[in-house]
Length: 239
Ligand code: MN
Ligand code: MN
Image (cartoon, rainbow, N blue to C red; front, side, top):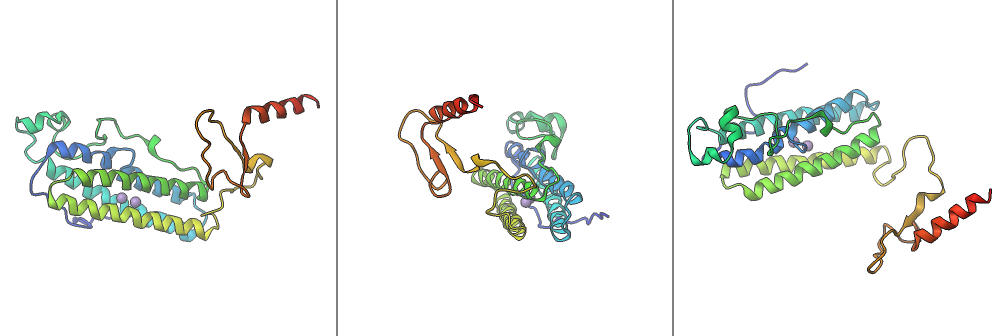
């Protein structure tokens, strides 16, 4: 059940409207890393989450994202005050001159929002990992928007939104940890085969870069995969 309270979760105040900046903000309304994507992703995932606690967390965070969507919408509305007038600022962002003040379901480049932005699949581990990635995208976008913001009210709101995305990341990581999958990559019922710990060094020039992602004892480092694969194929041919 939904109700709409006619009040923002955090007030939005814009002193100096900037329609060109509003165009950047569209990314967080109708863009891939935006609040609509996040809210709908967590909401849809919650319906197939078998764990009651995690399901409820997904729903709570989804509703919070819809609150963020409302705040970003209000920011865009405020930044496009007076967009009906003809003027140089408005000519820089024809989308608002043509479609009117306020947000639209497009990103900063005018691309329509699409459900293809949403990553959900039914497995709680896969879904939570997708959610951590979604929060990383949102955080990155908010940081870029903050760097370009000049209006103090806008900066305050964006800093709040960026902070909440970090809070969500922490919650999703804790939820993954609660099912023992924060540091354990395998899930599902099918066991991996014997190649699961092999690192293939597929780069041919320059010094080989080594790190925990390709080192013993976790990984067997195959320095020359061409030779190794040819050897494997020759071996397979004998059977
Ligand atoms: Mn958000
Ligand atoms: Mn979030």
